[in-house]
Image (tube, rainbow, N blue to C red):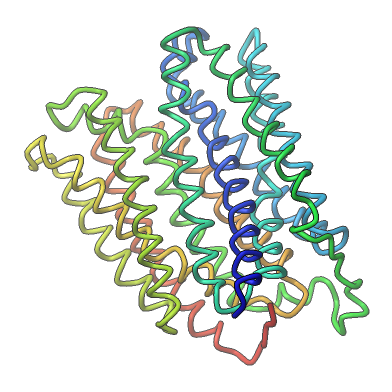
Length: 400
């Protein structure tokens, strides 16, 4: 492979990866400010969870639809629109006078977030060399985790120094800067618009008959229910279960995200060599589920909470590149946007359910239920991964 091709691949991977990080930063644009919003608007944990649920319900529906839009008008245009909507949502949230406007801002942010997976994965599949795709997916996942890890730190720091409204105003500059960067680099991302479905030799909805697509959807739904609970309430749960401070509990969440990113690096190399993607996922999630149950027992010394959370994140991260390659194997030619849109709407659906479900557990005084639920949903997800792996080996060739 030539140096020019390597440089081209790295540039595309970097642009798409950072865009994905911005998207994941916005997943927590409200969760990172929950302590301030709870006080400012006198909200319950369930009401706070509903803000995230609105975001992810809208994003889930929009993600399935935006996959079709990506395949019709091109991924680059759709990606630009997503960044513009995220920036606008932050401005609406910063000016919110009441809970209803917070819900509106969450809805707009969900619309913006909906485009990133179908657009990003389509750009990677269209513009990155096939042999570098495992590493591209690895970087894509890592950048998302960095966005998740950075959001609470950034928002809490600005809110502490100034106010939660200032934090949201500062956050609005991030997608604006990213949109400018993407525009200046628009040629490297290409602007290929696929042929209409009829010209591709199949209907645009034919992929919905593939069992592997729905297995992958189920996998994302189950794992993201668990993730939604961790993101929203892990710090609160850990301080209730263990004699640790809130900053230490927040550090445990950060360790989870950073170690998950490290796991994705290792997972990218593993996926590039292994072909039993479902087996990698099963082993990783069994280990993560066992550690989550251990954490729920409240028998660990407080000093071990941060490293155990990190180990859960590491195991989950190792599975991520194999997961994305499993989805790619299920996608027929010229349907990447639609397949990733539908499958990743499972992520948003789960993230919509998780905060409300675990918020009710927290309101009911059951902090251990968070980690028991994480273990349960991760274990159930293994069955869908194994099912997708078996059905994904059907003769449905895919070309990048």
